[in-house]
Length: 370
Image 1 (cartoon, rainbow, N blue to C red):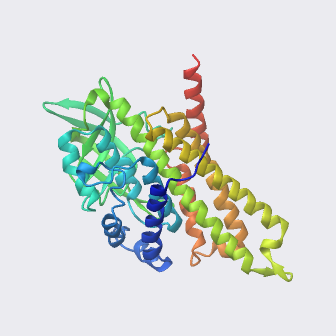
Image 2: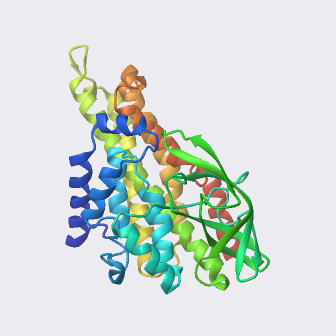
Image 3: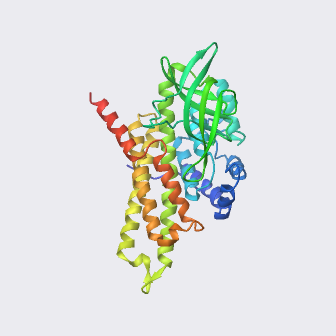
């Protein structure tokens, strides 16, 4: 397959790289990590001004109307600088789900606000136990013209700054996705700090008023597409994390001298770096294949799981290799490379790690042959 990017995609990637590298420094990341919100609002507005928040959203709502591949290119550049932003949750999980499945009124209310940087969205996809986002444990019951939710959702990213949370829930007839105000009645939140120092919230719903996204009859299809985007967005972030981590390792091992020659000249270092490069390229090609199939309307769910397995299994190997190649410097929290390890581990287990992902993939294959 030809995995080369088009001229338009290269332009999107380069613009995103310019915005992120021009604004994100180690000192800036430290500053945001120490803030109350842990959200770089100035950078968020720069992305909005460059048209990158709406790169894949419909033109009639202010976006550029491109595909999900382009959103992945932007997320990859975020991963390269480990910028504290709710880009994955707002765009990949939230806005694109609204664009695909929402009503005209829902699209008109939320998509322009995301494009302009005025709205942050998130999604409550994680589940307790087996952590299968396609089997939500929150229950939705009809309440006159609306709905009410009851249940628990762990580790909701950025809920403390979000205007709305998209919550998958089980209905009497299947599953559907609902809008919930995280600060509204019937919602209680417990603050949590994740491995990569983001703020998440454990949300409990007790008779919480909710608005169904789009048509409740299309809920299963909406949720599957939502999860596919979420997993691919994680793969894109992991690709950026791994790319940049390897570059840090290459620079360090080329400059660090032992026994009269640079570390990069030793066979052991070369092998580890080569293994990390191969894993990173596997993440890249499986991500691009799955995202392309998703964009052209082909069934990509199995390909998405393959990409997520590589992002989890291969990604954790890459960040471990990079830590090892840095020796003691890799454990120094004042040295920037440790953040790539933290982000890599966080992404690895988000919405299921390698074993859980492989199990889901096996289940899909088994169901397809029976």
